[in-house]
Image (cartoon, rainbow, N blue to C red; front, side, top):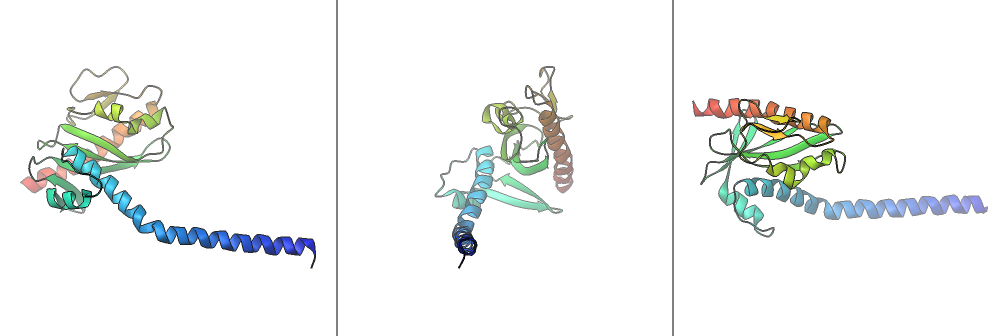
Length: 193
C-alpha cells in the first residue's frame, strides 16, 4: 500500500472516530443543555419577581410561584403575590437577535427589571446591552408614552441613556422593547376588559 493511501485511510478513520465522539457528547449533554437554557429563562423571571431560588430548586419554585398565561398565542408570566408581569421580547439587534425578559409592575407600565438571554452585539460596545449596570438604568422607568433611549441625556421618566459608541444597538434595543410592548400591552389590556 502506498504512503498516500495509508494517509487517506488514517485521516478518514480519524474523522469517523472524532465525529462519533462529538455525536456521542452531543447526545449525552443535550438534555443538560436544555435544562440549563430553561433555568436561565426561569431565573430571569424569578429575579424580576424578587423570588429567592437556587439552581437545585429553581424549577420547583418557578412552578409553585409563577402563573403562565397564554393570551392569543403570547405568553405572560405573572407573580401570584405582587401581580408583576413578565414577557419575553425578541428582535433584531445590530449584529443578531436580542432576546430577553422584561418584568413590569402590575400597572403594566413601570419597568422592574430587564434581563438579556441572548445577544450577538460587539463586546465592549453594543454588548453592554446585556450588562447588569446598563440594564439597571431601566428600573423604575415607564414604557409609556414610549420608551426613549436617548443620546441627549435621560431627563424624563420614560428615557434611558443610550450606550456610548453603540448607537445602532441602542436604536435597535429601543425598537425591540417598544414594538413588543405595544403588542403585549394591547393583549394584556384586552384580557382585563
